[in-house]
Length: 158
Image (cartoon, rainbow, N blue to C red; front, side, top):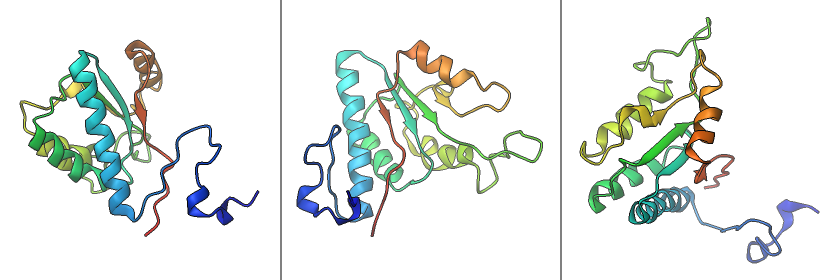
């Protein structure tokens, strides 16, 4: 089957997972942010923690996410954000957060630093892969009981 030849109206037919054809990248980013916020709101209402695996690329969802969290006063106190990546130095350690390529720096500046402090999750719930403790994330995910949303492999056209 040539997947690139499937008409838009047929996308998702007989799919094992939901497929949502969207327009441009702005629509994709909005839907990602909305999915994050709605999941957190639902879990908060049930007294349940929320665990996300978050990319730092694409990043267009984060300004929308921050705006929605602040506007709707959505508490992230019971959220865990597990980031997927971080750049390393030649000797296998994290690059400095001040480096423009640092994912930790990006998230600190553009997400965590822009959310109202009273809504923000504790710093220990903002997780990045640690080159000195590679088993931490799998153990943490198991301890937390799994992941609610894992963003990754998202293709954006437009």
